[in-house]
Image 1 (cartoon, rainbow, N blue to C red):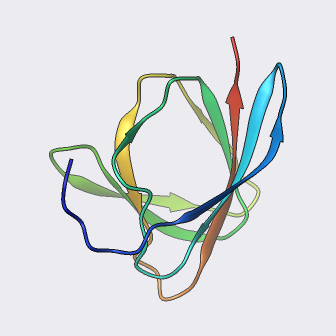
Image 2: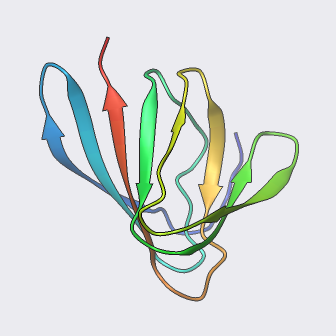
Length: 98
């Protein structure tokens, strides 16, 4: 969607089986996921407390997250996730295979 020059966050797939994909995401300061669309329902489990910024294609909004406090989203979500913090931000994403 953009020609963003920020560094990319680093995904590490921990589990990929017939039911789920579990990915650890590590965001160095200033990094982002890049524009993407979620093809599956998913749950995010923050391992870090802080704000991430969510760009939805029109505007950027802060998303305050607390370590261990999960949230879920439906498939079809499109966005870029950005770490504005001066520290690494980590979360685990669990995608539900239908």
